[in-house]
Length: 132
Image 1 (tube, rainbow, N blue to C red):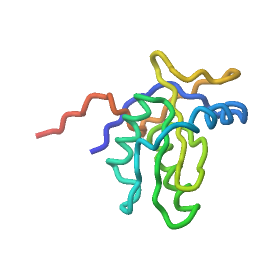
Image 2 (cartoon, one colour):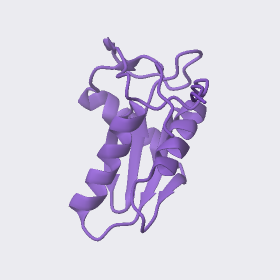
Image 3 (tube, rainbow, N blue to C red):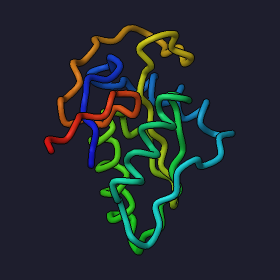
């Protein structure tokens, strides 16, 4: 079951300078989430949401046959978690989502905050109760 709730404000779009800055920060990161042969599952999306809550900027290791498949998987995870797809390099994708309280990553320039979609996974949201 997917949990949905509001998440941290995020820039509407990243500028080229902001993407370049994030790529520089992400260079030394190790992948924290792996997308395997089963593709993008609810578990992968939940794991990415938790990692984004903890780190703001994460790398994903994506197994796939073609670059288009890997990019589609990364963009699907970004959309589901309310994050930005920053880069795909080989089988590694870089995602960014700003934290609501005490952001760690300082982006150059200014940005306009977006309102998150209601369909976005928030790993810290309380679980909805199921009717008996």
